[in-house]
Length: 203
Image (spheres, rainbow, N blue to C red):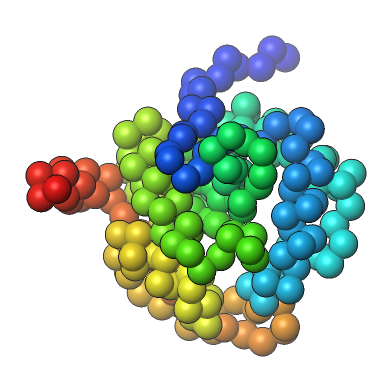
């Protein structure tokens, strides 16, 4: 049976002065492994997928899987790169965890490598994902979830312009095996665009 033609072609990249957002590609595996392995101690508390010695071969397989799912419009995992593309600074994405693409909702996820954290990069990337997502992508709602214990993630969400919608109590199990609350944030396209227009006028 023939496959139906794709109905959505995702934008490939978004460039700002301090970083480049783009889809992972075949050949990115070594950069991913280096970033994850050098940041394991920083990531392990809140990122259950982080391992102390992720092989380059596994990282390359993941990059190819991410690219395939991107082209099929199944999920959109994004690398955060230096502007010239020479170094991976972290990862993010628009994830279809609330339903299919036709619902026009996505959940933003993010991690920043250890030696780039604490400098405002996460907040800048979140703002870029909101701007990009509400102008070049079809999203009507973008959400963000994090552990109640992840103060850095909570601050990023609030500084980035998301509204806190609630707390899911005893919602997940963290990598240490303890149950934890989940903080839920979101932005709606029409509201965000109106607020962004007001911000532009004040500048």
